[in-house]
Length: 391
Image (cartoon, rainbow, N blue to C red; front, side):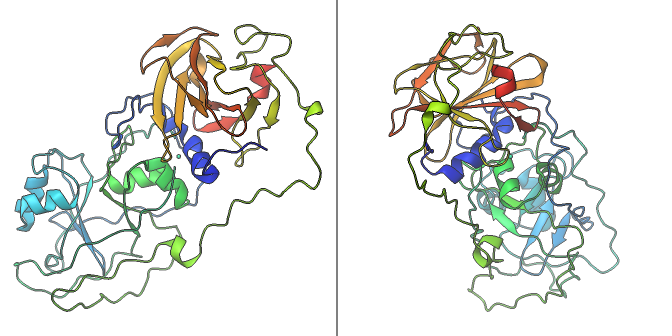
């Protein structure tokens, strides 16, 4: 059975391809996305609580770290000035520039602890906003690598009571997306966006700290703030993957050779540009691996390395990107809110924004032990079985 190198990682990448439809280029930080207008409200993820309200300065304090929540029009320097911090250091800690204008409700992680607001101070009214969250979920988990903790020069005070359970603080690694991170922690992308004030295109950057939404019903940890000696680092919250590793993705070995004779060869009697289905076959070949929701979100179609890969229908190139193993992924947007995804390809001949016609060559099959194209159809957030569209 064909499989991608690093199959689990690729699967998560392709599960989140609706986000990649706005990527449009191989930007490592994925910041310059467009808006395709898809909604993630139907994401099947665990319910989460709302993010706590910050104090009057815009700070949310947890036992092991603090974050500041940006107000409308805030720059990193504005937050630093409000809290008596060095703007350059705060910016560097969050992979930003002091002059970067932040989204309303965007979370900025503090490099060290500041004094808690006086008891009884009114919470700030800043919110993460209620913009409609567009598009879909790659994942691998970069563990938070917090810098050392020290106390700011402001008047010392007793730490404020924790505002609910302390969320995991995730530092975005290269190649990760908001959707992959949401999938990794089993939360909705919408909740992740609301907790962190992400823009409508859901872009994140390498080195950015994200708060992972707390599951609803989770008892607040009776945590006592960890006390560290001067010069010592603060303890890093243990990610779920450390306590309970994700299960290995094993494919049982076949006890007998697989009979490929029964696999439908949809390309035998028609070309990629023809056929009566909504979509044409991207290559002519047998279905090596069928669609299984959540396991294989598309079909793998047999084809020799170097075979031209055709556009399944007329549309626009919405994304050309790569996963963490540098395997190209191409996404086309079609009428009716449909996306088609092409993976295990190489030699891409189009660029983001190009209009393509049905049957136009857009790439070629990537060389490998088993030649095939991974093909998906996505409708908004969800992957759907491509076969009804091809037959």
